[in-house]
Amino acid sequence: MNNKALFTPCKIGSHDLSHRVVLAPMTRIRADAKTLAPTSRTIEYYRQRASDGGLLITEAIHISPEATPVWSIYPAVRESASHVPGIWTQTQMAEWRKVVKAVHEEGGKISCQLLHTGRVAQPAIAEHPLVKNKDYPLPPVSSSAVAIEALNEIDNQYNWDQASTPPRQLETDEIERIIEDYKKAAKQALAAGFDYIELHAAHGYLIDQFICDGVNQRTDRYGGSIENRCRLLFEIVEALVAVMGENRVGVRLSPIVNDPKTGKPKQIYFGVTCSHPTATFRYAISGLNAFPLAYLMLTEPRVGGLSLDPKSETAYSHPLSNQKYRELFDGVLIGAGGFTPQSAAAAVEDDVYDMIAFGRWFLANPDLPERIRNGNPLNVYQRETFYGGGDAGYTDYPSWDELVNSFSRKYGLMEQGEIGVTLKKEGSAVS
Image 1 (tube, one colour):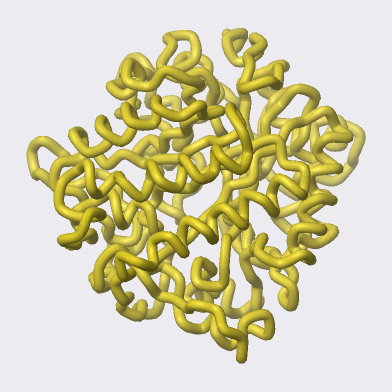
Image 2 (cartoon, rainbow, N blue to C red; image 1 turned 90 degrees about the vertical axis):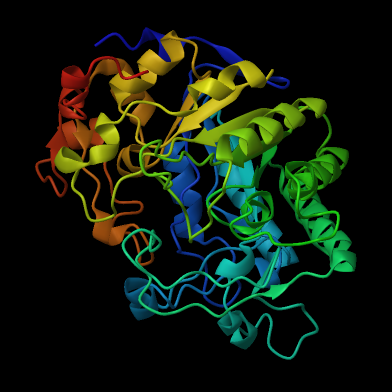
């Protein structure tokens, strides 16, 4: 396997990286129930995946109670009473500082992904002890008072089993409050020692709800034209750069691709659609060049179903869709979504992306960069332990060294060359 392209040095801001295999941000829903802060398990999880000169991006870290979902609409999470983390309290910041310290001790760099989920957050957060009887703005809010559509096979990307509460439209004079919440979170991340922060502006969450006209029906300066709908994105980026400094802020976007035959989107999140996605995201991506960003991450619209096993995962056999945006962005471009070791190396070799973020395979293989480098088989991920729970499916995946020195094997193994083998039938992984 020719994977040399993934192991050439690169640079993000002032930091030199030794390889191009990135830990993608992945919701794990294992925060402390009382504090919504990282735990000792969280520290170990990131420490295991840190490597000398490697980049990790955290799971989504929520900037305020209004931004924070209580995932009781996931059956499995409801049963385990698990939570997502925040970064608005001093306790949360202090615990994230321990995570950062562990990553730095392994020689790695780490980016803090900041998120406001918008209409995805639900009113149940009001009952959490950190929030109850306090004067916090509460969810759900969005660009417009447009509810998430009735759940079906297309819209239900995350296996909810309950209907969501319709959001209220944010008033124009509330936008500054949202920006201030992001700034406060960035200051917390800076105090925790993060090397970068990443603005999560993708996957159907608040900023995506402003960018896309399937939700945004506003008539003020944040609605209507593409320029207006991207205004919040740019204003938040400007505010975050002011806090973090140059080359320390990343952005994540998930450009929508409409099927030319049906006109329907190939991949959407939480029902967020866009009538002219290519024009919209070309404007957004081009506009980000005005800021001294660390990187831009784009999600490929090919993520498979949550119930599929690796051998039947359709995402691994789909060609890329976002290469058309490469020429628009001047900085470091990271690709995420449905990559195999082979297709990742091809995407970097062909200069479609500078770096590749792996989610499921990095989740299951704490030493993923070295396994790819050496061509070792990969632990097969267990989907039922993705969200919530304890050590199982979180910190108990073995490294290759641990595996070869152990007589027990809890997880299956898969040869790297077997992943996405249908790509060979379809031609190049990059098209």
